Image 1 (cartoon, rainbow over the protein chains, first blue to last red):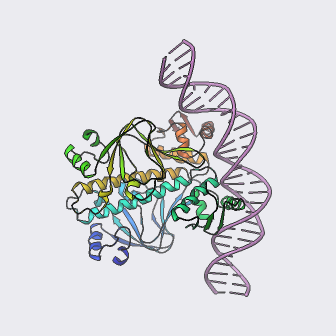
Image 2: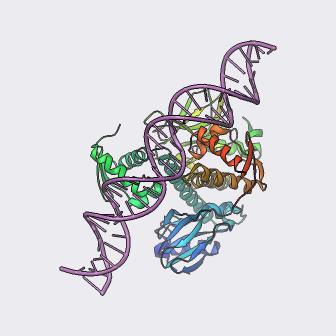
Image 3: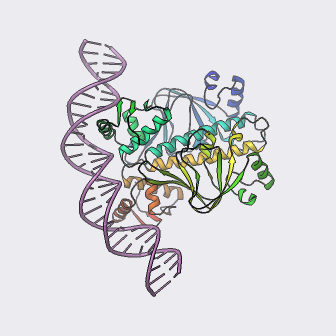
Length: 220
Length: 220
DNA sequence: AAAAGTATGTTGTTATAACAACAAATGGAG
DNA sequence: CTCCATTTGTTGTTATAACAACATACTTTT
């Protein structure tokens, strides 16, 4: 088992192989392999295990009634998915989880962590605390996305997102973790319209951008 | 102190006055009163305490660069706010928290709950577990909102939201917790445009609505 | 019961983004 | 280096939602 790797993840950060082994046993850990494009969790089902991506990566997707396909999130190695649904237990998934390449996932049955377990091993509360921090962080990310998609115009969304990035990275000169298509998806607008607006803003001298690198000139 | 009331909240559900007293002491609980329209937390500041609304109620708001005012959430008595920011600790608030009427808030310093406290009282892990459930539930609510605002058309958003409500309430005949303005805000569209679309959908025989009561006739 | 306030629906106009289709640039792979 | 695939930018057209302004309920107050 990859104790080395796990000790560097959010959930087992800094723990010894022995500790991790104990916790994994306690959580009924099971490793599973998925081929590219294979579905890990289907929308509509209920789940009781969280997943940790060991290798490869995984996408959280939604296909709506009209066949539109949209990507809500992408989970790299070391990160956790489905923790909300697994913890609440009875909520059907609104999304589908798919391996976007050959992927190994470690499943942890989180149920017994959340029941008031009388003989709760000393690691229980540590794990819950970390799981909570993961949840809080995801919360913040969701709030931010709502925030940046609240303005009605593309320009408004761009300014909201870009000025946040500038502030978060402490400089008006920064790079973003998205290409144009991904940024458009994140801001919930059309890619070509986004390109157009960025071009216009450059002509107006508000900013300069090339690929995922931005320089802001004016913020009000 | 309102042990009676607190024992009915998510965070202290079913706990005895004695237990609650212990926990409140441990969390440095402090009650504070706010007048109508008074600001509780300002956007930009960092906070270390979560709030529980004891009476009255509180709104999570955002005022953007252009003076648009929008309400992101409304917290009734017994419910918790700012748990994400207080737990992460160093994140500046993106929102402002305001009392919308005369309101009493109980603040709990959540920091010591999250540090690996050596002599952690037996209640610690219970509290964290509940706080985690609160967080998971908020997560789900945020995800749902993103979900319902992802379709580009007003009709798409309405169908997404309404069919979810129908499914959640187990009937095509249901009521929603919003008036028109609030629904428009939630779906991030104009109120009058929303009204218009609802009218059109009724004429097309897709649904019937009066105030916050809906009957769906067709779902595909 | 009148008055004032709030919520909802209606219409026409205007702004804006989606869409489609293509051109140009970029980046790997052989 | 050339070829193919991907990404990005451009343009014109069309659909759609925002906006403004008003009419019609429906509530609440006095």
